[in-house]
Image 1: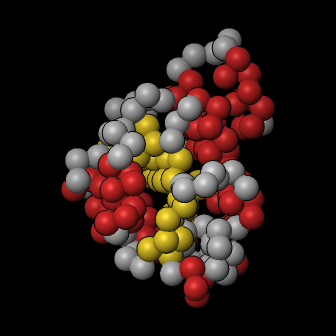
Image 2: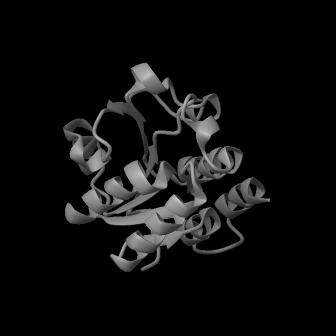
Length: 180
C-alpha cells in the first residue's frame, strides 16, 4: 500500500542526545529523520515525537528539536508509544491511518510502537534509514520481524516520493532539494 500525504502522520521515537551516541550510524538517522520531518511540514502532514525517560536520556537532539513545534513532543516511560495513554491519544487525535515511524532503538521502542499501533488499527511504516539500534544485528532482526508481521518497511526517499505522487510541482521542487 502506498503512502498518502492525506492519510499520513509522522512519529519520531526517542532521538535523544544521551542515547544517540551509542547508536549505529547516528548522524544518518538524524539526517534522514530531518528530511522526512521537513517533507511532512512542506506537505501539511502532522508530526509528533516522543522522549523516553527524559530525566535520564535528556532532550531530543537539537537538529530534530528545532523542527518541532510546541505540543508535538510528549514524554513516556513505556517502551511503546502506543502503550502510553498520552501518546496514543495524541496519535489517535490526528485521525490518520498511516503512521510513519523514525527513531531508536529499532528492536525496542520502534518495534514495540509499530506493533502497538498495528494492533490499534493503524498502518505502520518504519523508515529503515531513519532508525537504528546500538547493534546492527538487533536492527536487522527487528526489521525482519516487523516485515514478516505486515509492518511496512520503507526508506526516507520512498516516503517523500510517495507523499508527493508526481513531479513538476512546487512541493516536488522543494522536497527534491532536501533529498539531494
